[in-house]
Length: 160
Image (cartoon, rainbow, N blue to C red; front, side, top):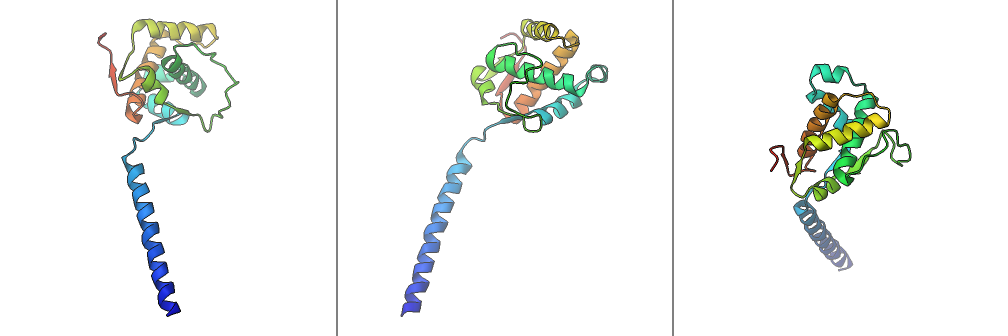
């Protein structure tokens, strides 16, 4: 008798636990996956997209500074310090919630010549030796990376 009660309570406990786990799994499965910007991943993706002559003119550190500055420009409309060491993130784990990019740009981002020029001037003021062509190419490739990870819904360059 005690053995039957024990087995029945174990079965009921298992069924309840399986039901709770299953319903939570379904709930999590329906939620939108949040995009995460990772510096190393972004740098690798962007460097693969860059033309050889532009990629040859940039070292890894310059590319990372360009990517951070471009992301900050998209997120905040600000020109960050190219050598800002006050960030609590390490280079190994530079995860930034890229959702702010999609929120700031709604469903699309318009990458115009003025914003590229602004970014170029800010980077030059910080002492980074880059060309306007390099900043333009890295910005375009970075937008493709952001779209690939789901941080941007659409990228338009037609001015409208």
